[in-house]
Length: 447
Image 1 (cartoon, helix red, strand yellow):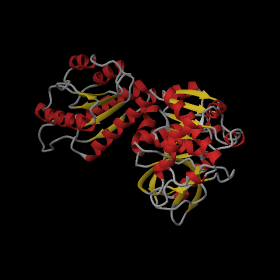
Image 2 (cartoon, helix red, strand yellow):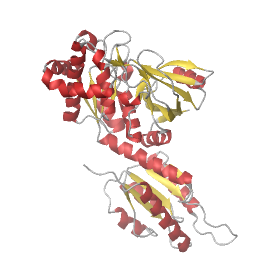
Image 3 (cartoon, one colour):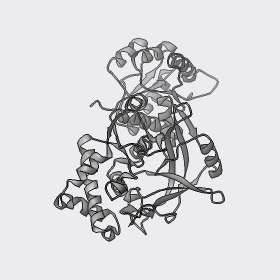
Image 4 (tube, helix red, strand yellow):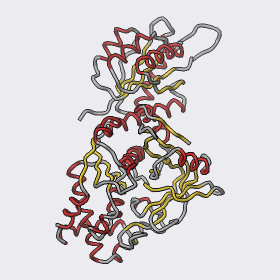
């Protein structure tokens, strides 16, 4: 597998103040190396098209170009990059180091206009852009976020998403086509009928599921109170899903849940999905494939599970939106005082499902990959704080105080036709996800 690679491309001409340019070049390399070990850098500033060509020949298929005007450079330099590579570009303008009525040291900004004009003309799309010196916090933040977004784009090229069963009637928004998934996100989509995993689960002996049951008991509170047949059948499902995920290298899955697992198996799959989320596999229910992909992106950025659920309640006075689902939240998201408590499904009255309020978090991101009325992909983004609240309803829930007005978010997202499932990411990842949307050519609705 090709490793992720970003390439620093500092372009310019030798007729400006090279001592100032060299200082910025050295500081830029130091910053990039601080941010990532996967950034290739040249040995010298690329102060001619010949030097640029010689440097670019070292790379075959980079995942991000950091194109910096170390001094002014005409559009021919950007043209060489565009001619060779199709990956995203971050255009970086350096701040003029000295304004003293004397010589213009770098003229980086004029060079940026030339480069951006070429990029926009060639690609019909704007590059990512940042203005400032390597020492500036905003520059560091923007470059770091762009690197992470480019890495997400790379990760999706090596991702297999699994759809287990079909969406229930009226939940068609969650369906995905394999060609659509590949074209839009670069990810592979494979599908399997839910009954195949149900049949596999039924085939296991008590001895084969013993370790899975023991593992689950260590993660959950009160599993032992679940009737023995449901407890063992849950462990059978756990083994079936776990082994399938491992064998097929699944990074995200969207599983059918009701009614099959109640009617055809007699035990819900909710708690299995919860554990998979704890194991680093983004697992969503109701066969919502793009919901699962939304979860995956949040997990990749934060290194921890992402909550998946419906917006079910709003409190204008508190400025909060409550997200809830039947009981699939990762055990590690539970509030410490209550822990990952087990109960029965709120409607079907069969267990085990999870039943708790999620732990607080100072910064969270509400995120959804969805489609507009014309079928074009778009990203929903809002930020806020997950409050320290007990469970709001039977099942798992998280209450988010949003940074923008909750009423505005609800009114506008409903009337804009957003799907009813959202990921609540434990961390502020909005900038990275917005940059990723730009890289994928998708609209962003951000609050």
